[in-house]
Image (tube, rainbow, N blue to C red; front, top):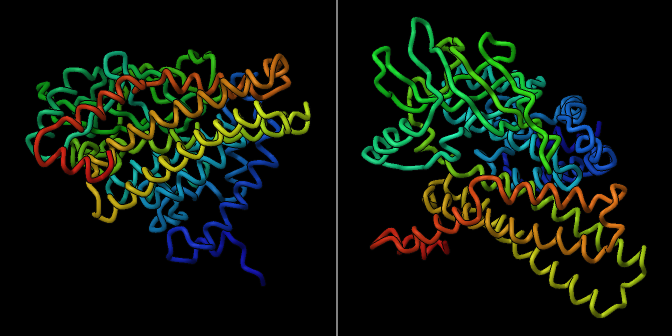
Length: 425
């Protein structure tokens, strides 16, 4: 009997060989055929694309970001960054909301596998592959980003800094922790079954012990998912706020309890920007392809020199951003193999974030202009592409913050600066 690409991808030990690429084609084809035609629905209804996740579950494709050791396909950011970027980009090209929610869910799996105990990793990934939706609660009113540091003294300094800024705490009690705090812009939260929370663990006497990640089940006493997400763009991401009031989480469900602050020293820290950039690169791809077909076929202006020039400009920006995105993914792959420094990868991720924002904004904005008045109609996807990308451009970290990140590292003294320049950051 003929072996399917999915079965072959599971059987092979190679990361992203011919079998994996063939499976990516199958994955992309399904997204184009089934998800793209209904992509506007989630935007109009301001609703999480749960039906698309159920379809991925039916195909057994929720295994994509889970490692092979837990029965997955091993195409997640923590195991194969180049493959992960490819899958997220293809899915986002068909439906930006599905791509964003899928990459959030996949990033949660990466954090679970890298930061949890073996028992936790096996249990949580099994639930996720069976269809459980996950979200990550990190953003807070006083702390929009999680700064990464390495080394003992720096990790201690980071713990002290974030303990002051973070307002979500996990206080140790008998058998577990009591979690309290508030989280903002928590993508997937409207539909999530599991909430992966960033919290500062406190000893019974109030002493800060470091960053941990309580996993809260939907319906837990003290957890409220506010119906707060009614945004300009990315309306289908279900990014509601969380209010957490003395939610009890047993020790078995606290990721990182055995090693607080592990997130700061993991290769994953900072990598989230790469996965998110893949989402908006995919949306830019969709906008660009729609624009080219519209000008060529609908208005039949393919021989207009001005149109040719402007399309050429946009394609150059798109390809430049794409090259930077895959360079970032490759750097993370090298870091996983111990061939690159995670700090350098994180800095390049900030650069990638800026490059993709600028390219996707240029493409979607100029697509509206070149398409004329019809591009603003709801019957055209261009106005939705523009709104989704514009929402990305104001999500933290902003371009300004990312540029400061890049510049501060380039201006760092001595060996650190030499390392960054060598890596092309």
